[in-house]
Length: 174
Image 1 (cartoon, rainbow, N blue to C red):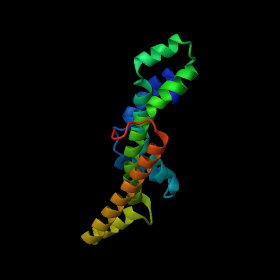
Image 2 (cartoon, helix red, strand yellow):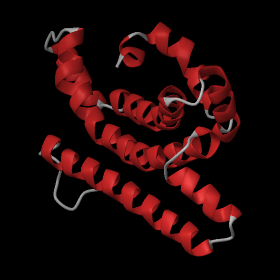
Image 3 (cartoon, rainbow, N blue to C red):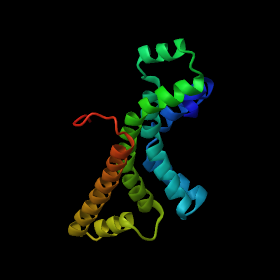
Image 4 (tube, rainbow, N blue to C red):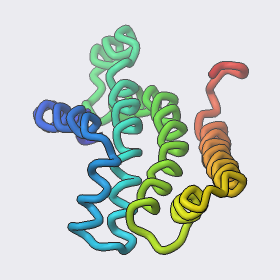
């Protein structure tokens, strides 16, 4: 929201946001483990780095893609900047926001697995690594199915929340 409401902040951070996606997470993950150790923090940072981009970009698109006629009408009616944001831009951003959250939900599982590959003692990423090095392809497939299950579960939770938050969305619209 701050990137939308403060244009100078958006102009400063938007290029950094784009640049953050040019460095592969598989390269950043070992650095985060070196800097922050093998604890919970580097894993959380990896998941945040993976998820922040789709949510932020989707939200910014939603904020800025309001119908121009409605924006013009609200300005003519004397609406304040806060009223325009709260009654037009924020509701307009909810559908794209949930699209970004759905993408981030599935990416978060991938981010967690990557972080476990690189610096954990337990977890599905460690299980996959050990199974792969032992040539236990059956266990690797089990891990893949578990990852798919959790990705679909998180995605479904976001869809359920979306249906409860965005009640004005037309049935059958995606």
